[in-house]
Image (cartoon, rainbow, N blue to C red):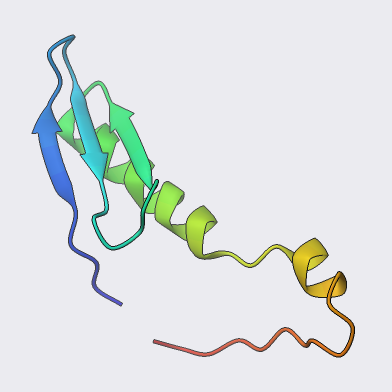
Length: 67
């Protein structure tokens, strides 16, 4: 799956990166490479379902699909 991100220099140094299509998915890093590694992890966590949420809905099932 390809996701577009916005990578911008931070005033304090380093980089801030966010994903416009995933509200609230933001990360940062001291270097460009570190910021890219960190946002990849943030995206994976953002998209990971929380099993407790599924268990709270009787009859719901957790299904995995490949994009």
